[in-house]
Image (tube, rainbow, N blue to C red):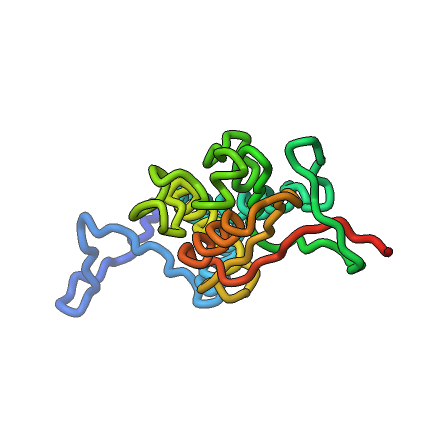
Length: 223
């Protein structure tokens, strides 16, 4: 019995000139992102930026503006706490004259107190000028050493110096209130026995210190 060996030919490989050649060491190309996913990524990035954005913080302090504000508040506070002319206590050194006029005392202006022995300005307790005797005041007014140019002068230097400081404060208050700051007002509280010569000297010094309006305080009543 004869045996027959069967051989199957292997698939022939095309080795012709048109056969495709495999490129050695060629890397696979990465997949390109789709256009829709790129748009979503950019939108999500913008959303994250908006979410993480914070308001700008003020890391500095404007001291100049705060000082201006505190100065205005202080001026108004001093003005509001100033005692009114109607609340001035009377004593043997200060008695107000009486009048038939009825009305509320003015709260505007710098307070000038002229008692029998001294002159005060504002809320200061230290006298600006200590007055001599009534006889001397009636004849020549305040001592010549307090005058600008001798005994006949009406200008009282210590009173003018004190009024200059009060004028600066009152000017700032009037400007803040929208009033005319070119002149100030004064409230004069004088003893009823004040000599006319002394009263004229006080009024003249007020006028020279840019105080153009005066309020003479009295005790109101009816006869």
